[in-house]
Structure formats: structure tokens, C-alpha cells
Image (tube, rainbow, N blue to C red):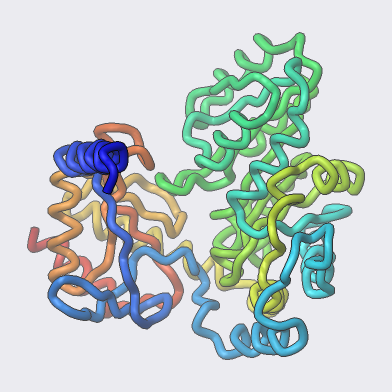
Length: 392
């Protein structure tokens, strides 16, 4: 090993040691088998079967045989991978079919499918905020992919206080000279599970002639008629609706829905779309089948939200700091990194997998467990979780 390489290795080791001291060192879990409800986790003590409280498969579609069969049919027709980017030979019929279904499902003219949800936010923001006179206005708790897309775009970045419509209006007025203003929010925030005031934000954007981008990644499935999300629930039609196939739809890929001309601009200008290999055929085939389930079983989301309200109340009754709400994302606010890690370890020892959420995912001092309730969880799982939480 050369002296330079040894020095670089030592620098990285020092970084890891500092993260460990802060309680922020991360490791990659290895799951040998399992599904939405139960997983087999490989660790130093061997394999353990745990109740999974970290899946975003809210409606428990991943284990369904119908989903697997849809993926197999696409795999048999197109093979294991798309083989190229969408603008080359990777644009398959299964991708086009999914885009057509997504556009119709969410009431927009057109849709664009990307390989990941992270990728779609990069493509959208770099395509639309393409001049220095443009402004991107982000909720302070917007997803990392929105912030990264904004940083890569040519436009300037402004932030407004989380879910604070008055502060949003301040930022809109302060950027009145911009060529184009783009407001980016989430319908349901991924680490807090709280809901954006969509009606009020849409009204503010309309008054100030600003684009509204709503990321429904965690809204699709639990909310709205037949799981169409909170925009559909409230009658809000954003300029662009962003979503993912990797959560409720139990597959893989990101997507954006909007006016045809806008979508075509993203197709032609979105570098993260243009230069990425297309999603696997099996994933797109499964996502189409997921839309069928949402259509045919319209009450799944309401059932899940009702269960979430109940679990939140039972946790609060034990004295845990759990905000009110109906989202299946249930944060248990702890505070410090080390206390949160200790609680996650105790729960794992009791048979529950609920990873500690720490900076930079959440702000310093706001570490938490993030429980995600799904329709796969049974009442016995909830009772055992509450018993484990009550014993701490």
C-alpha cells in the first residue's frame, strides 16, 4: 500500500470514528428473507426473525401473488433488464403502458417514468429551473432529492418554514422579480408523517403565479379516493405531481405527471432521466398491477389510516412523544442519538425491527424511531410492540 493510499484510508477511518462517537455511524442491514411484516435479519448473533416496522409497503402489496405474477409476465416478455436508457433502446412497452395508466389515474395529460423517485426530482427541477433568474422555494423538511435537484439547477434556492403558508407568501413576494418560481412540497412528510396544508399552499401559488410541485410519495395509497393521494382527496391540481412506484405500488421507479408539453420538456432536458438506464421490466409490470389493486380495493387506505390513529393513541397513552395524525408514518420522538439507538436495540432484542433515525436524515436533537404501519401488521404485532415499548 502506498503512503498516499494509507493516508487516505486513515482519513476515512477518522471520519467513521467521529460518526461513531456522535452515534451517527450507519451500517447496511442484511435481510435474508421476509416480506412486509416479517423479515429474517442477519447479524453478529446469527439470523433473527423480526417484525418489520420499517417498510413503506403501506398496503401490503409486495407479498401478493398477483404482483409477483405480473412481474414474472413482464420478465418473460422483456427479460431481466431494460438494457439501455429510455431514449435509446430501453424504452419498453411496459414503461409506456405504466405512464399511460399513471397519467389517467391522477388526472393529468401525460406522465414520465424514471428509474427511481430520487431521480425524478433531479430531472424535474434541473429542467424547469434552468436559468439563474428562476427561483425554487422549498419547504424546510422537503426530501433530500428535492434539495439536491434544487442545488443542481441553475435557479436560486429559498426555503420557508415547515408547513407555514405565511412564510411561503413572504418568500413568494421576496422573489417577485423571478422569471419562474417553483414551490416544492410533499403532501405527507417522510420523517414526521404530517400533512401539508395543500389547499392554502395551492391558493398562494395561484395568487403569485408560481408553479406548484407536490411530491405524493407517501400520500399515494393511504390517502384519497382509491389511494390517489392527498391532492385528489382535497381537489388540488398541482402543476406537477411527483410520486414513486417503490412504496405503496410495491415496485420500483419514480414518476411525474403534468401537462404534455411540460413532461416533454423534462424528457428533453432532465439529465438524470436522459443518462440513466430505464427501470427493470418486472418492476413496471408489477406497478401496473398495483394500480389495478388500488382501483379494485378502494378502502385499503382508509383502513390503514384508522389503524394508525389507534396505534398513535396507544403509544401516547404509554407516555411516548408521538404527534397526532392519521398517516401510517408514526414518529416516536426521542432526542439524542445514543438514546434512540439504545431504544432501537432494545426493540430488536424483543423481536422488532425499527431503525433509529438520526442526522442528517432529521435535524440535530430530533432523533426518533420511525414506525411505518402497514396492512400486513396484525393486532398481535401491535400488542407485542406496545409491550416491548412499555417495558423500556
